[in-house]
Amino acid sequence: MKYSFTIILLMGVLTAGIPLSAQKAVQKPPSIGGSFLLVNPDARSSGVGDATTGLVPDANSLFSNAAKIIFAGDWGVSASYSPWMWELNNNKSNMAYVSGYKTWNGSEGIGFSMKYFNYGAVTFRDDNGTVLQDYNPREFAVDGAYAKKLGKHMSLAVSIRYIRSQLGQGSYNNLQQKPASAVAGDISYYYQNSKDKLDFGNRYCFGVSITNIGTKLQYTDDNTRKSFLPMNLRIGGGYTFVHTADHEFTLSLDINKLLVPTPPLYALDSNGIETNQILKGKDPNRGVVNAIFSSFGDAPGGFHEELREFTIGSGIEYAYRQALFLRAGYFYEHPDKGYRQHFSAGVGVRVSNLSLDIAYQVPTGESLVQKRTLKFSLVYNIGGTRDEPIQQ
Image 1 (cartoon, rainbow, N blue to C red):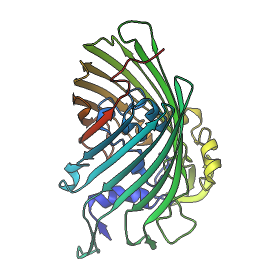
Image 2: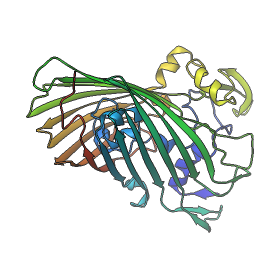
Image 3: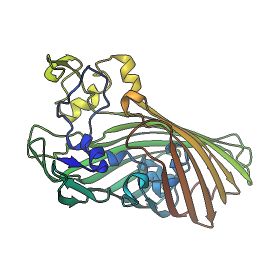
Image 4: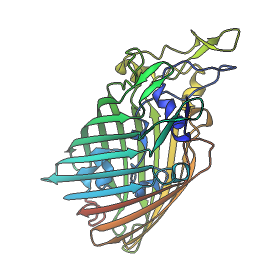
């Protein structure tokens, strides 16, 4: 069967775990399902290279570290939209995200969010080019979170998530495709404080989160072929300096590592086709808990390959009177592990408690699934670090 370019991009998810033809053994990125869960919907943090942890908390903090909402203020809501990969699919693919939170007593909070991905129309054709059917791949996730303050400067949060992934239908490689569902959870920690007594005090923070810990996705009728969710470890932080009534600069840095099995190197037969014999590495068919802990030492290329599985996002935000924001950043992923690399720029305006943020990302790598991207976010927030100095 012949597929449109969009469905080709999705096949890597649909066929996770299916042996591929190869002329030589090469390093491969981890195979996952529900990869849309890794996409940052927030335009503000997208403008600083997806370095989300170090920015001042708001409703969009639920995406990367729900523990931040304790410091975000009394309550807030956000809505984000992106015409996703419009260059590839005639503006028919898009991403939408809504979130909100409420805190009370200055020590507890709850949050909710929903992300929706629409990949546009996909046309299925037979070998003669005859149209068989049109299909609309889409995915969504619904989250709930609870956060608790631990002392004056730190907090902890747990989240639960329902995921629905509908990427294909019909038969592929003699396997019947079907929608997949999963349940997952997050756990996150966040700390923030201020340094010196210059004007409002220079803010610094760091956080750790492990997200998408949950059941596997089964896209086919074969019970032996299941895909891990993109279980992810994020460690990040930020530092705000100058921090006067008129000017403020914030540096932000995030490091991520997928907590899923690295594909091993398989032996090749006389025709150059991969067999089931593992030459180096570990069998990827393992349990969720085992996968999390073994993901730091299962790469067939050893320690050097493990290092290549870390991604880095970094950026800087400038604020003028907390009303105008300018941002720039860079995101890096090793070429052997997905090749997602892009520069980003962003601008934001704030009037009273309402903020509008726009981000533009320009890829520098050669990943097929990465094109120029625009993101828009509208945030309404009451209280929080932007409105009041951090208390020592």
